[in-house]
Amino acid sequence: MESPAVNEVAAGLGGEKLEVFRKLNLLEQHRLESYKSWPFPESASCSISKMAEAGFYWTGTKRENDTATCFVCGKTLDGWEPEDDPWKEHLKHAPQCEFAKLCCPERDLTVSQFLEILGTVVKGSIEKTCKAFKSSFIRENEERLNEFTHNQK
Image (cartoon, rainbow, N blue to C red; front, side, top):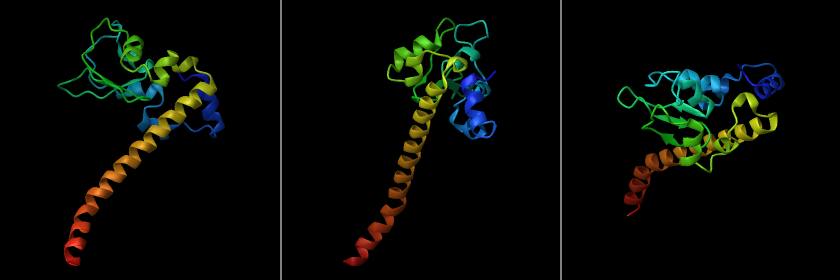
């Protein structure tokens, strides 16, 4: 179930389903869908639904299946225990996280809060993309620079 804030933003975007945000795990529904092999049942404090509600999407592997990452701050946590509360663990390990500080499920966010979180997530994504581009550019051009410098001698 999408929150009123999400529905309002979606309506403002012409009723699109916000699929462009799937890769950012912006929506709780998308975070839920990311879990492929979570070791805890729905009755556990750190169930898939509670993890997704607290902002985590699954980043585990078959070997390390209890690894999850926050869609806002990027904090990755593993070593979960069935009684761990995802909101408390999130705030404990990432007190700077804007989403964890709200301690508010998506369905209860105001439009303003949702847009602030969206801005934080998009900004982080842009910064990550720029950093990766810069690193790639430097790597690809170091050899060319070395060749140019060598040929100038």
